[in-house]
Amino acid sequence: MFRQEAETTLQLGVIRERRRAAALATLGVDYPYTYVGAPFPASAFAASGVSA
Image 1 (cartoon, rainbow, N blue to C red):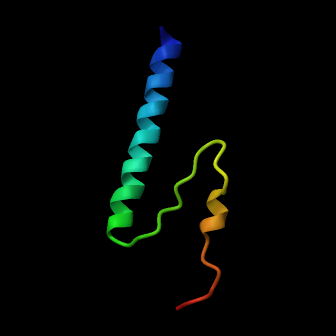
Image 2 (image 1 turned 180 degrees about the horizontal axis):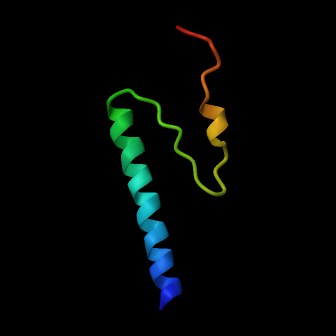
């Protein structure tokens, strides 16, 4: 029972992060969304000092 509740809570957290990233993307804001097993770590989203 506790394991299923923990998995559900974790899934809700992932959904919340995805929604936050999507909402910010619609505003043109980059959000360093990452998760366990992601192909890019959060550090990959750090500013490189290059501007357009």
